[in-house]
Image (cartoon, rainbow, N blue to C red; front, side, top):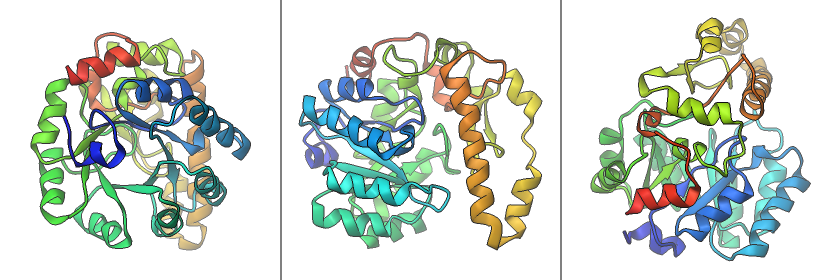
Length: 313
C-alpha cells in the first residue's frame, strides 16, 4: 500500500484517522500511530490552549511518528489564531484546515516544515489551495460524516486527480478494505476515515453513541442545517426527527445580514457544539450523534488496532 502519501509522511498505510469533534483523543491517536497509519485531532476538542499543548506534548513524549491537528480556520472559531501559533511552536507534523481560507496557515507552516492538508469539496477551491501552497487536498465527498460535500467520490476524486499536481486524499464512505481499495483505484493517494473509528473501544464517547453506529443504517443519516451553521450529517434519531431540519430563524437572518453573519454563525456553532457534547458524553434523550453513511458497514465495536487490521488485511 505504498503511495505518494505514505512516502510523504513515512507511514505504512495510506490512512488518516480523521479528526472527530469530541471523539478523537490522545489514546486513539497513539493506537493509530502504533499500527501504521497517521491521525489528527481537532483543536476544538480542547477547552483551553494549555490543554491542547498538553495533549500534543503527551503524544510527542511517547512517539516520534507523524500526527496532525485539525483547525477550523473561519471566523466562527475565535480560538483559531492561538491554536495555529501553538501548532507552529510545537512543530506539529501536519495541519488539516477546514471551513475557511488556509492562506495564513500555509504562510506560517511552510517555513516551519509543517505540511498543510486542506478540506475541499469542489475543483475550484482545490485549485485555489494548491496555488496557495497546500501539500495535499482532502476530497470531502457526499458520504463523509460531519460536514459533507455534495459530490460522490466517483466524481470528485478523479476530477481532482486529473487537474491537480498534489496528492488527493478521499474522505467519506470508507469502512472496509474493499472501499479503501476502490478509493485508491480512483486515483486517491490516501483516505481519511472517521465514522468507523467512533465504534472503537478507545473512542471517548458514551456507549449509546457507539451502539447507535451498529443499530442504525446508512439510510438513517440525514443532513441537518441547525447544528453548526454549516450542514452536518447526523443519525436521524427520534430527537432529531422532533427537532426537524427546517432552517432556523437565526440562519435566515444570517443569510440576509452580512454584518451580523459572523456573530450569528458563531452562536449557532457554539449552541450546536453543546448539544453534540451532551449526547456524546452521557446518555440523553436529546441524542445528536454525528456520523456518515458508512455506518451501514459497522457491525461491532472493536479496538483501533483491529479496525486498522480489517482495513489493510
